[in-house]
Image (cartoon, rainbow, N blue to C red; front, side):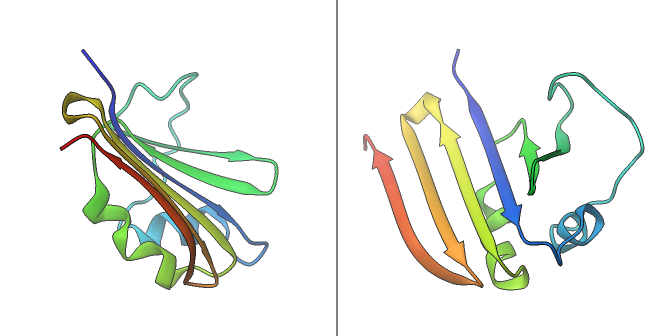
Length: 103
């Protein structure tokens, strides 16, 4: 078994949790969990809003950096095919990207 996840983190004082979730077509449920056991989870870590998917969801996060201001990190991991990518954006512009694709 391996991980098959995607996550996005946003650091910008103008983007509140609700705005970040809305940019992804998601909304808060008010439910609280201790670990990301649900399909979708979000949390605040300092100045960062983090949205986690327990599924490999690159299409869901692809357009988010252009909709959000500030720093945006996007990570996709699909260990079953040994693929991982991480990208960083600043105000919608790609700063850097790292990809590992065993194919």
